[in-house]
Image (tube, rainbow, N blue to C red; front, top):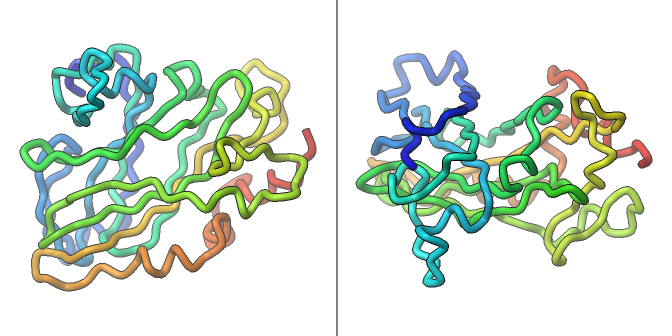
Length: 243
């Protein structure tokens, strides 16, 4: 089902003053439209939450990858978040899950953008009734300013190894027990808001190299949270809480 037909949509815009300045030449604000970007532009993309199989047409065993913008997908029980980070700037995107439960919508997410030049990531597990993954890294790859791919990057649980507060899922994701998460009407104490570090790679429309991915991959998985001290109840402060 196309995004315009989804009953419930969450729009979360991160638009800085810089992205609205004259240096932003990208006037495409829909994640279902095509854009050709340069460094300093804003770039709009979406993240859809649903079941894993719903991201494939008719649960197709060939695993054809279609964008959530494609009407051939049935995403009636889904939610969408829309972001607009600045091109080639390392960004921390957050989704408050105190009133939104990814597991209630299938527990998986894909990142996507474009229509004729549509691209999307593979589905990434977020949450179920037992475990919740709160930290992700997303890389957007461009070629001559056109989006080519979106990749979820994982570090194999190296940042939570030996920490009893976390469980390593499939040797790739650090997860928290879902019943420990702070949610409306529940007694959990840990802020399980999703944090997505994102960066860019490839080239813009002027063939300038996008370098932010090479910078972020050298940082510790949670290090960016410390750079956003103005975020209330930063996720970093939650990692020391026991279940």
